[in-house]
Image (cartoon, rainbow, N blue to C red; front, side, top):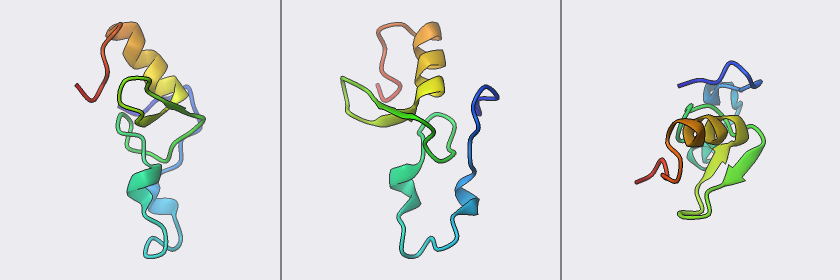
Length: 66
């Protein structure tokens, strides 16, 4: 699910992936680089603010990791 509301950046655009672990910078919902990251209060995983906002609108009180 890629959010069209935000300016996401594909993980493929990272120039030196060997020195940067892109997995730590990737949103688990849209799979792009984190854009305005927000941490879940339950699991402390970072998500794009637009992605987690849309997720919670459709799944109130439910963490995407559960």
